[in-house]
Amino acid sequence: MSDPDISKPSLTGGCQCGAVRFRAAMPPSDVSYCHCRMCQRAVGNLFATLAMFARGQVEWTKGAPAVFESSSAAERGFCRSCGTPLFFRYKASPNIELTVGSFDRPQALTPQHHYGIESRVPWHVIGDALPRRATDENSRYLKGAVSHQDPAGAD
Image (cartoon, rainbow, N blue to C red; front, side):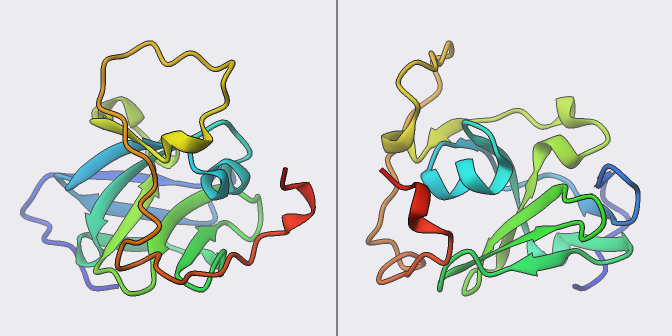
């Protein structure tokens, strides 16, 4: 990835073991909670919290993430040593979405909406008034996408 503009404020982050580090030039274009089933599986939780940046705003400053092609449309990056989920990106998009929990200062990134709400676990109560959207399977990035995640646990 290209070097971010270092004249702009940036945030740093990385994985649990320190093998992979990054810097992202602020501000992100979006910060959201994603409740879609693919994000749930990718982060091992009820939702992922993601901050979207143009790919050119992100620099890997130590190591490089391993990449899993979670679908024909998207890839997910993680540390090959400790397994920390680091990013999501649509292959055809100019953007990358970094996991907010992997930032050194996650409190600097405030979610603006919920996405993939159709897969929200019903017993999880969302206690905010942020807008909620369903996954648009007809979006230019998802249309015709095929999942590569193990369907064995699907309901």
